[in-house]
Image (cartoon, rainbow, N blue to C red; front, top):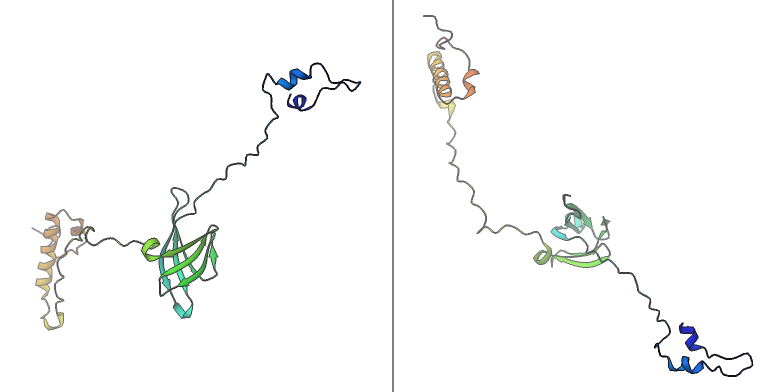
Length: 189
């Protein structure tokens, strides 16, 4: 339709067609088709979050400790120890400045600067951390060498006292204590 409008109607003898005036008036407001090229939408996926957990210069070699967040739910985070120029799982360490605490990385094709203030592992705030239970201090060790040894009767008495204590507490350990001549099951009436 648009091509008919652009072309002029000419008769075989070269004369102008009597119907050309209809096309010139363009009563249907015809126009040439507009072609537009629509690029497919590009899905931009953000690279996984990287946490800087440490920097070391062991043996004169600068290395960064990095943790990459799980890409899929339910997966565990991955940890890496990479030197300058090394790469793992689309993470490449470019430069490590141990004094400033900055690591330059290429994270899945995207350049990033990591530092401890913005990308470092967060330590829990001691103000908000739950308090640990206070345990009693252990008793000082007893110096056994200076004590006089127990007599056989005292040993038997201590075993039987411990057995009765365990039985009162319903502790099954009373069954594993050795039998003595004072154990009720072994005594003859």
